[in-house]
Image 1 (cartoon, helix red, strand yellow):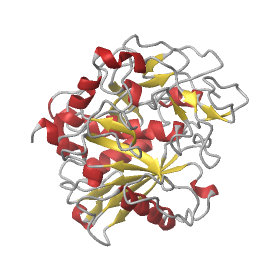
Image 2 (tube, helix red, strand yellow):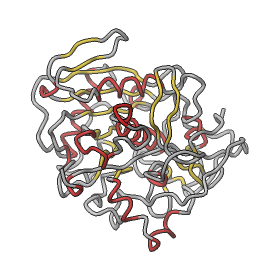
Image 3 (cartoon, one colour):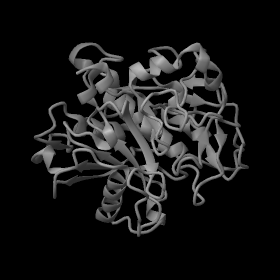
Image 4 (cartoon, one colour):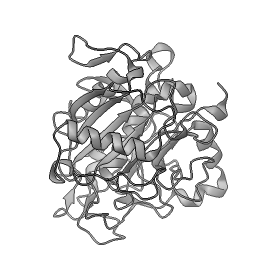
Length: 367
C-alpha cells in the first residue's frame, strides 16, 4: 500500500501540576495539531477530527521549521462544553467491537474477548491496554492528572483544589461489547460512529448523563473498512476522538438520550502498517502492534483531558496533549517507548506536560 493511502499518528498524555511535582522534560519541540481547520496535516483538517493522529509521513511534513512556532506553547483550558472540560472521576473505557466482519467471538485464557476476523489481534491488545492503565504504579497516566476543570478559561495551571483528571486506579476497562448485529459501514461517517457509541452506552446501561460523565467509548472498526475515510487519500490519519453533540461531524451531530457521549474513531490501524506506527518502538513481530497502543493511548489521553472538544486543554493552535508529542522519536523522557503495566509491556507515546513545558512519558500523580 502506498504512503498516501496509509494513515498514522500517535497520541500521548499530558502533564500540568501546581504542586511542582518532580518530573523531567523533553527538549525536542512537540508536534503541531492535526485536527483543526488550517492544520498542516493534509487531509486531516476536518474540524471534528479532534486529537487526530496523523500518518508519520504527514507528521514529518508538518515538522518543517515554518510550523515550529506553533508547537511550543503550553495548553490552555477551554472553559468546557456543556459544562464538561476533563474526565474528573476514574476514567471508564468501553470497547465496542463494531460489525459482523469481526467474525466469531471467543474468550482466551486471560478472559479477553477474541475475534476470528482479527488477523493482527487488535481487539485483545486494546483490552490489555485499557485494563492495564492505572496498574503496576504506572506514571504514564500521571502526566494527565495535572489537568483540571473549574478554572478560568485560558488558565495554564491548576490549583490543588480544582477537579483534576482522575487516575484509572486498578484499570480503566469497564466493558466490551461485540456488536455483530450488522456489518460495519465500509466508510462510516462521524455521525454513524457517534451513533454506535450512543448505542453502546445503552447496551452497557449507561442511560443517564451522570453515568456517562467519566466514560469514553472506543469504537473499533474491522480490518478492510475505512471509517471517516481512514486509509484513503482523504484520510491521512490513524484515529481521532469527539463527542456526539459536535455539529461539525460528517453527517451531523448524533442525538443522545443518555447525556453527552464521548467516543473515539479507532480504525484497524495495522491496515496502515508503519504509517500508523507498526515497529515504531519494537522490531520484528514484537512491534506489530506498536501503533495500536501508541494511537489508542494517544486518543485516551486526549479524551480525558479534553472530553468534549475543545472545552478542555489545547494550545494556541488547537493541538491537544497527544498531538504535541506525536511521532517525536523514541526513548528519553519524551519519546515513545515501552511502558510496563500489570497486563504487559506496551509501546506508548509521551504527552505534553505544562509542568515542564515539554513532552513527558511519566509524571507524579497529582492527588
